[in-house]
Image (tube, rainbow, N blue to C red; front, side, top):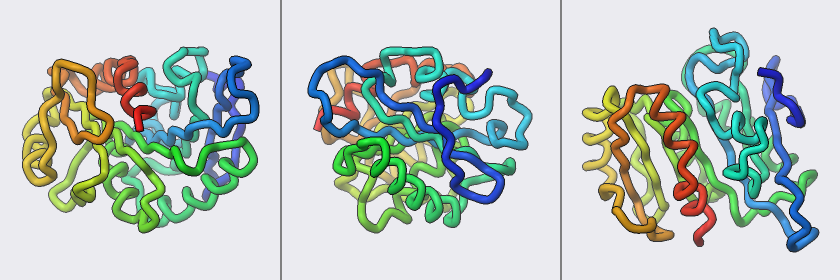
Length: 223
């Protein structure tokens, strides 16, 4: 899939960060835009097997690329790793540098920055938050994260939303206990909560379902 309307920023050697500006509505002209950062999965690296890259599996980049209203409110920032593999501390450091530039040049709201990711990127959500000493990311949203034993638990007051499918159920339940996350409620999500939602789907289908749920985007913006 060609990344139409995406603005490319170089952010690490041989790799780009793809940025989508919010859809103009005429409401509150000049007001800074909330920022949603997306970390892709294993196969969506520049040298990975998936031809759609960061827009694979109906990710937020796919929604922005197709004009979906779900991401229209956000300045969407999607770094792409050059090589297949897990996200690293160096990636986190370099990403903050390009994120500073994007926010400054694209009228982003530095006080409303959210982080989400799928699979390897979902695990990286918690690592990036651990490296984020300034608590830049106000809310964390992980989708079927490829959690490891050593994955850090987010700080108790950091709002968290975690969607998972059948394949990650056991590791997510262990992480849920460590992190003190609650099961997804049937009603609207409270703004400051920490929740887990079991979608009961395979890995890729979990990505598509989670990123198609408007309630999650609304939860991000409920401060």
